[in-house]
Length: 278
Image 1 (cartoon, helix red, strand yellow):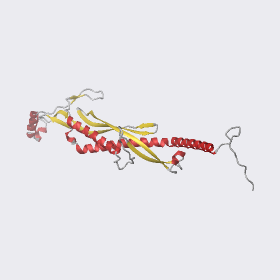
Image 2 (cartoon, helix red, strand yellow):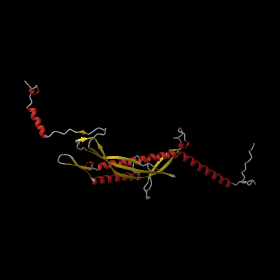
Image 3 (cartoon, helix red, strand yellow):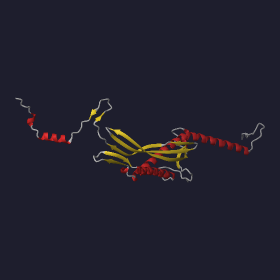
Image 4 (tube, one colour):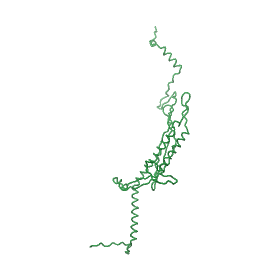
């Protein structure tokens, strides 16, 4: 029976044969190198997907924090006490006062509710989100998120994207909130004023992934109170069309109204006939 000659491996040109430990060591080095190269290729292929997921999570965290904070604040605060309008004896608006205690209460409750929701996420107590169980004993609390990406994403082929074993990806999120009041005074019509009290909320959510940090703040404005204050119509008003002064017809006095009423009572159809000059 024909036998193949045994192939020998040499370490140098002097034909010094490689020993078994040397072969094993070289094979181990090649295996480690190829494995490391494979990890680099897979990581670069799925990194865009990881970044898209991270940006999506920042929006999700910010929106959830704002919705929870505003909803819980509206349950506990009476919005009718936010401002007070004082009228004079004639029923005209005399002054418009803001209630600073009510504003401080709204501000503090909104901040507290937002921080409560962030603490719930850090404690893995939000049912609609998939968290990582971890002990947050660090000085900066973190939110752990867990995702699984199929290995087929590394191929870049749409047909193979959902194939292969799933790679667990752990994302770490850090969130804080900034809240402030804003007053917007608008002039509408003739001598009328619209006052809008709004709450500016900004949630700074950061997602930490290996070798980079992605930040995508969520900013929104929630109007809390709107008040329309009508003013007196002036005697003269100049429009913006470039015309002259447009006088406003004065309302008749009480004496004129009584005199006109007496004339209407004494009126007869004969008064419409022409006077006889003959």
